[in-house]
Structures are given as structure tokens and as C-alpha cells.
Amino acid sequence: MMEKKLLIGAVCIIIVAASILAYYYMKISKSSLTPLVVFAGSASKPVLEEVSEEFEEETGISVELHLSGSGEMLSQMKITKSGDLYIPGSDDYMTKAIEDGAADPETVKILAYLIPAIIVQKGNPKGIHSLEDLARSGVRIGIADPKTVCVGEYAYKILKYNGLWERVEKNIVVYAESCSKVAALITTKMVDVIIGWSVFENWDPDKSEAIFIEPERIPKISCIPAALSTYSKNKDEAEKLLNFLASQKVREIFNKYGYIATLEDARKYAPNAEAPFT
Image: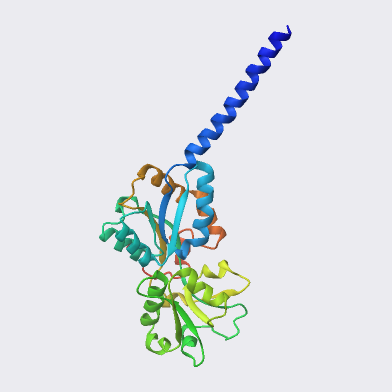
């Protein structure tokens, strides 16, 4: 009887040990998959950082984020001929990526929409209320580099569209390299005002606030599109990530950070503006 009990106990121990080893083997196998490389404009930085962790927890597939200006990220993709997903901060750069053969046009998904706004320091100490106020003497302005960053290009186009570029340009003291860097100009008080996306207000609400531009003065609505890179060597896993980013779960995360979920909602801020991919 004693020998039978010992045998049963030994079998149980072996089964438990085997289960534990199998669990850790599966975990190690999943985590050893080649990371998915994402080249993205930093307009979506806070969401992508959170979502990439959730995706890895759910699938075991790690995500390697490269975040900067959308133009710089596209250049890196093309030079290195690498990357699994491209996520710029505007449809203009996605169009460029498709024309350059770097993004698959059949896989494009819009993750969120963006509206340009005037972003000032909390409490608006300079009393900025309109685009015309940006031309006032002594106002220090920051924008992103129009040549490589989506929101910088938008800032330039808005000022040109409203006949203000020449008057405002003299007050621009910084041209930042990415969305996150231009947003930081306000929180660090390096400038009095920036032209950015309205969502920047939610990145650091204790230090910044958005002044919305009059709807008729906004020429175009922007969006955050995502697509598979034509250089991807992990297309099945990359497609899983793309679908995850376009899911309702991730849309709710975008909403949490103040991004606009639908074109209909975006049009409330600019009803007559040109829409993305039209």
C-alpha cells in the first residue's frame, strides 16, 4: 500500500513538473519570436506605447517602436528596407509611403482622427485666442518641422490658408523634430504657443490647454493611418498587430487619450474641411 501511495505521489509530481515546464516553454517560445518593428510618427506615441505592451501580453509577440517625425520614419524604413508596420500622423505621409512602394495600400486602416489647434501654457498667460494673436509682437511660437513632421506641415498650411504665414513666421523660434518634441515645448515653457494637434492638451493637461481654431479656418482634417510595410518578413504577425490596433479595444484607448474616433466626430470641429484619403 505504501509503495502504491509513493508511486501515485511520484506520478503527480511528474505531471505538475511537466505542466510547469510546458507553460514556461510556450512562454519562452512566444517571447523569442522576432519583434515586430513599427515605424510611427509620434502623434500616436502614448497610445502605441500602451497598446504594444497589451499586444505582447495577449500574444507573446513583442513590438519594437520607432517614434519620431513621420517623414524621418519613412526615410528610415526605405533606407534600411525594414519594418513591419508604418503609422504616420497624417494621410499625406501614408500616400507618400504607398507611392514610394514602402506601404501596402490594400492594408491601410484609419486608427483615429486629428484636428489642428493652438496649444498654450495652462491658464493661457499670453491671452492667445486666435490665429491673428500669433502675429503679436513678443509671442514665442514653436511648430514642428514642416519638411519632415505632419503637424508642422499642417501648421504651415493653416497659416498660409489664412494669409498669416508671413506675419507669423517672424515669431517662430523653434522648429521641432517630432510631435512629441513640439508638444514638450509648451510643457517646458520654451515657447508661449505651438500649433499642434488638439490631443496634445491631453498629453499633459496640468501644463497645457488647447485653443480651438474656428471651423471655417481649418482646410483639412488629419488622421492616423496604419498599414503593413512592404518590407515585412513577418506578415502574419504584423497583420495580427494591425488588426489589434484597429480593434474596438484600442479605439477605446485612443478615446481615453482624447483622440477623435470617427470622421463624423472630427467634422464637428471642421465641417467643411477636406477629409483624409478623399
